Image 1 (tube, rainbow, N blue to C red):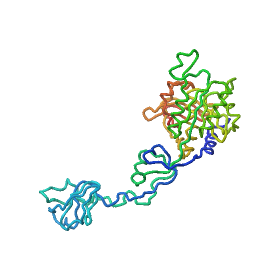
Image 2: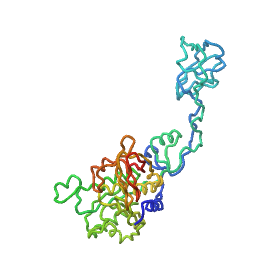
Image 3: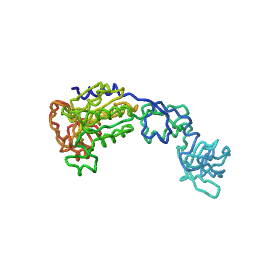
Image 4: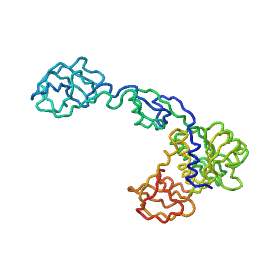
Length: 395
């Protein structure tokens, strides 16, 4: 059995991007850049007005009130076509190109109109209200780096750089195999004696999708080794990463690892000294990664957040560290001492602090829905009182 930090280090070693592909920008939300983005245009493409007002020559404001005939208008996308005549001005709107010869914009609040004459009664101040060409970026500038998650802000920048497509990392194909004779599809368990709803694979699939995976299969398996081996072969053929939930203990029907033996399973680690989730394991079979998660809902989701999320972050090109950004928060209540195994307690954000939830059982589902933080308690940690700083991770 290895420590959590050792397990994370092994995840870092194997979590490498799978491939890359070009994709239309309109379809790129949530993907990860595989190459840098360079601007194809200047932004703005010309000197443009930052305000609605009047484009003038500074030299024509040598005395006040200044009375300047309005030579025309300049709109965004349709500017004033000629140089600004000496002694005149141009009505201009935000984002419109500044006419040749103009060197400032007087905002409309400082101008009175008398038919086709703009009257500037007093010195409008030092501000020129002009955004020079290339103020934001120039053609050829490097705007975004590989590994950037394409969120809405990044998409705006790329589109503004006049790119219609980008090179991104391929989303890993993920298959989920849930094992257990007692499991039934949600909505059907109440009609089957001894059955419980299968909830874990739905949560794992959602978490995996959030971290960039493409779910290609989600199956519920009976605890029967022959059929489980057949399902393992199918999953390995269809997916880049296979997740198995349940069957990782030492009972008669715990076949999570055995189902991959014919596919040459090589374990990277088999147990991790954490609570909850000690049975979590990682390996390779037929060149594919396989990760085994516990069957209890909380254990499964906690270990998925701690180890599957960084694995997927690396496979999608973000880097495993992107998934494990710890931050210190004060405790809202008391955390008990931590003894032998590193513990990840479920908590919720409460008025700027981490409030540990009352029920920390590994099978709890109601409390799981209430948790939005994990509180990390290292082995040997003493009691932590309210107000003490603890390591937390968004859950």
